[in-house]
Length: 400
Image 1 (cartoon, rainbow, N blue to C red):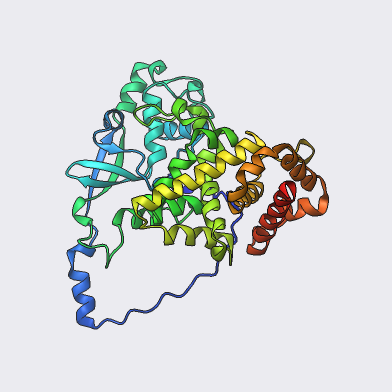
Image 2: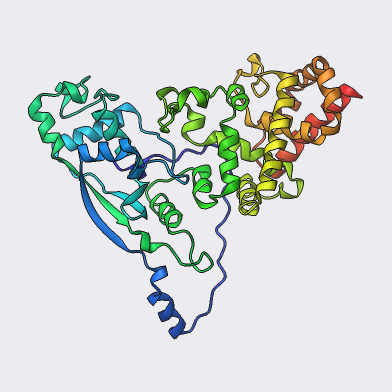
C-alpha cells in the first residue's frame, strides 16, 4: 500500500557498480559527543493526523503542501492501486504514515506519500472511479459523489497520520551535513523498493543542472521526437498533470530526463569509462554547482544539436526502421546526437546532404553487424564509444 512498495524499474539498463568503501573519519570521543549534541545534526520530528477532507483542501489550495518538490518521484499509481487505498480507508485498515518536511512555519512539502495523497485528492474531486476492489466490490465504478451518504460520512472521519520533520532540522551549514530533506527522502526510498537510478539522481544531485535536465525534457521538440504528450497542453497552471502525460512511461519513470542526461554524459569523451550508471552519476556530480552562464551554454548546446538532428532526420529520428520494430532507441539517440555534436562545424553540409545522410544510417541499421554495434550491444563504455564512432564515420562519408 505504501508508496515505497513500487517495483524497481530499470529504465536504462545501467550496470551496477560495486559499493565503494568510504574513507574513515577519525574523531575523538569528545568530538563525537559534540557532533551528536549539535542540534544542526538532529532531526526534529512532530506527528499529526489529517482528516481526508482536510488533506484535499490542503493540497488543492497549494498553500500548505507542495505535492511535487524537485526531488520527488513522478506519479505512478494506476487506478486500481489508487482504488485499493480508498478501499483500505473505507475498511479503516492501517495505512502507512506520510512524511512531510516543514519548509517554513506550518508550510510543508511531501517527502513520502505523494501517491497516497494524490489518490485521496483525485477521489474527492471526482477524478477517480473505484475499480479492482476486493472487499467493497459493490462500489465498483463509483466516485466519491456517488457514495451513499453514510459511507461518505464514514470516509470523511478517516485520518492519515503524518510524520513531520520540523524546519529546525535544517543544518546550519552544508559542509558537515547534507540537505536533510534529500537525505531522508533517499533513505525512505531505498529500503523495500526503491527509486530507479534517475529518480535517485534527481534527489541526490538536485541543483541547477538537474533543473536544466528536467527543463530540456519538457521541450516541445524533444517531446515530439519521443512521443511524450506536450507539457504546455498537459500540465495546468497549478502543476496538475493530465492522465495522458501521467501514464506516459518515459515521463512516469523520469526516463525522459535520463535520455537528456545521456547526451551530456557521453559528449564528454573523458567521462565514457566504467559503467553507464557511473558515467551518468559522474556527469551530474561534476555539474552540480555550475554557474548560470554554464547552464545557458549547456542549454544552447543541447537545443541546437537536437534541432539539427530533427532537421536531418525528422521527428522519427530516434525510431528504429519498421523492420526492426519501429520503437524508439536510446542507443540510436546517443549515436546521432553525439555524432552531430562532433561534426558541429559541418552541420550545414549535413543538413544539405540530409537525403544521403538518412540513407547512410538506414543502410547501417539494415545490416546485422552494424545494427549490432549501434543497437544490440550492452550498455558499456566500449559499446558507447563504438556506436558513436560508427555513426560519426558514416555521417562524414555522406558529406566527404
